[in-house]
Image (cartoon, rainbow, N blue to C red):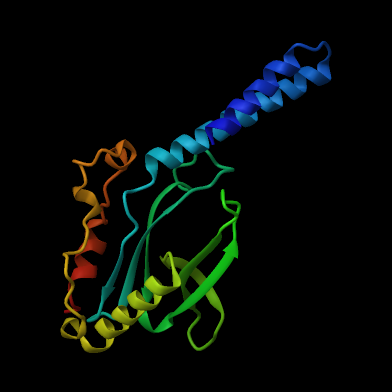
Length: 198
């Protein structure tokens, strides 16, 4: 990202060396594009939370998704940027595997498992969210989620290590991870996602 911003600023300076209104317009356009790209990258780096957890509530048969959203076309918006908590019915969820070749250094394959939220009684997906970064992890996590929602916590296998708490990583040497906002559920959602209905 920083190289793209540097390149657009270099183009702006290059176009300023020429005379005429069209070159001044090109320089101004490059400068504005570089500034917008820098603001977008800065907001992504500083506002994206440490984690995007998913909570499964067996008693309510609900799934609570904590996710970050951004909008490159509304850089200064408070409503289009930030954390959004969505609540879905467990019975409407369906796991999907998808893969694509992405523009990576090795031309690598990007694969992930998404959870699709279907409209009740249909196979039409009205929303999707990322569940796992690989097919193997996705199959394992989805099986564990199904066991928990169908049979309860007793059905979940014992793990060698406790789950990782991303909020307690203040001793890491990764500065970006230290500066990232901690996961903070809204109070009413935090209470609802941890309790059974009255």
